[in-house]
Image 1 (cartoon, rainbow, N blue to C red):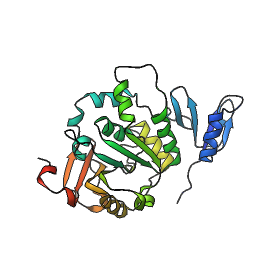
Image 2: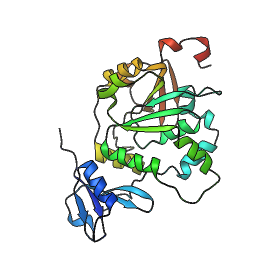
Image 3: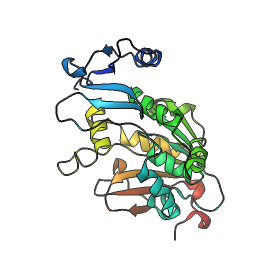
Length: 272
């Protein structure tokens, strides 16, 4: 197995700030204080900027930085554009006035969790990568800019999200039962999609394939889901652990596979 890429905390200031020092201590990563990180051998570096904590690949021609931002115009558009008709919302069964308690077991950058919370769900997020967890935590807790028409809605959604740094399979026995367990295993790289989205590309370069035992993940998810397990896949990817779902919601580039749980197989929970 290849070693993980070297990551550092970078600041161009003459002296590191308290938050730089705190992040370096929390992540156990070296701190670079220099005019440029180009002369250092780290493959990636984290840097606090006006927009928030940002991840960069330290190589010529690398894409721009990755920062978790829930003011993102694309996210706000998805929330305002018929949210209840989106496949993710349909897949988890988010409808009516009932508040679902959802476990996002592989939170990543938190975009799907934020959409679910914007739809009124209470979402518990788990992220096993300490670096990705730090990026997401910064996005969840950062004070945003000037109030906008979307500020109240964004704040309400963020208050429904709780983040924990943990590996789902390692702590599954500690977890309660949720209405829905949502799984988003990172899509494997292909020649067609490796550079399509900057965020996904940088995460793939940082984390690699994040190989996992698919059968164990699906088994644990079923044990902790009262109504359904939902798995996000690339549109043409095989089923998780080779198991055909009860329902599929297909989009242009991905799909949501729904595994109904025994407590939910009744007329009221079926999708027409």
